[in-house]
Length: 144
Image 1 (tube, rainbow, N blue to C red):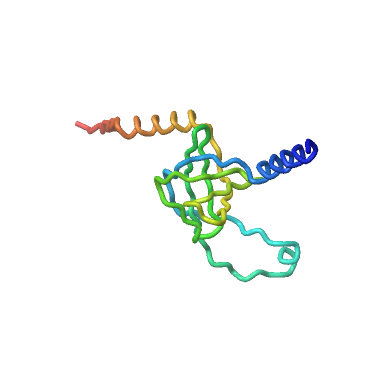
Image 2: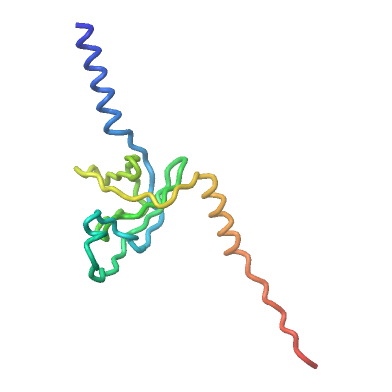
C-alpha cells in the first residue's frame, strides 16, 4: 500500500510541475506593433526568392504582476486580451501562456521585455512628474 501511495504522490507532483503554477496579473496597456520577422524553416530560407509579404500588425500588451512587468507580443492580430482584466498566466519555455476567462486553451505570447515592478513604478512616476511640470519657454533675444 505504501509504494502505491508514493507512486500516486510522485505522479501528482510531476503533473503539477508540467501544468505549471498560474500567476495573476492585469493588462494595463495595448497597442498594435509589427509582428516581427517570421520564422521559416531551412527549405524556405534557401528555396529562392520569397514573394513580398503583407505587413501584419500584432497586439503588444503591458502585463503587470506583483513582482514583474511583462511586455508581450501576440503572434497574430487575432490574439486579443481585454484591458484592465485580471488574467492567469504562466511562463512556458520562452513564452508566456495566458488563460482568459477559464478558456479551454491557452494563448501563447512572445515575451518582448521584462522589468521588475519597482523599476517600472519608478519610471511611471518620473513620466507623470515630467508631464505635470510645464516646460519653460526658451527666451528669444531680439535686436534693438
